[in-house]
Image (cartoon, rainbow, N blue to C red; front, side):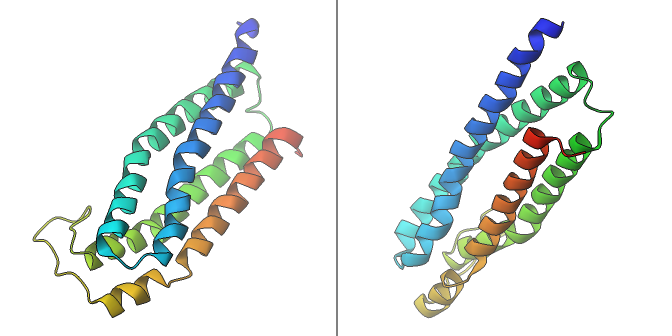
Length: 162
């Protein structure tokens, strides 16, 4: 069983790279749409970001399963660092859902798309209203939450400070 441990860790790290690749597409879109003013281009970029979510969620699933397996095999669950890393992952996930998702829902609605909301299609916003929404500093906040969270998790996993 112990001989599988390095392979499980490898799968965990590969899933982390897959997550960074998939979610990186969404992160780049967050900054790119701010410079766009054509609704069709903004919608296409948001569709690209939305498309990458399938790989993002699949890689997170593999990442968590392999991480838990490695934690059990390595007997890490008796140490605080792994619980702190799990806590950071949960906190960042909740923060992203609460801070990022509503913003992109509003952008979709401003484009006249329903997005994840049910009901009739909303009326598209005026060019001025759309520009005001896109000029938000929200992408920087989203990047800060994700970047700090990733750095904390890496610090905890690599240095195992406690």
